Length: 164
Image (cartoon, rainbow, N blue to C red; front, side):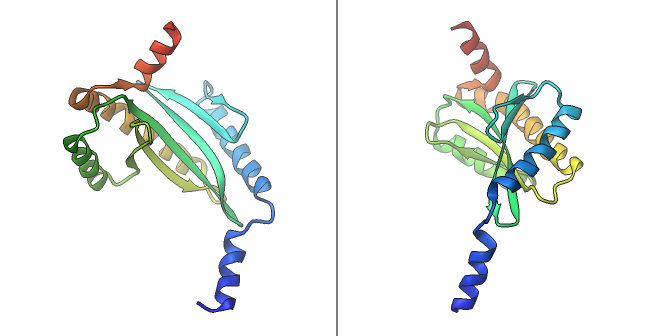
């Protein structure tokens, strides 16, 4: 790769003002959430959460390139499941079947489902579709995963936290 090509890559990925981009995307998301999900929670650090059915979806905004942000919708589907070969094959097969988002596994064994979109040209419908689909898929598969491998859904975990 030539020096000129490297400079062009640096121009694309090095941001002069990432906070401005984040703030613009956060403002857009807040407007949509106020309209569509008025019970959302804001954590004040470019992240939000909504509750839908038995799941919660975290929305995070981060820098992506010097001209864009990334908006990620992540649901913690099941915590404390027995992570075994059968479950991993099931999740990988679902990743190949589902045309939207993907299951993942956090360092502590929490099973997630996530989808990301770019923020600069994001329209209302695109964001709403991403958020609702992550919630719907997570809410559907959390019961299936708990039956297969045990563990707790987000709502089970939330209820346990409230009782403590």
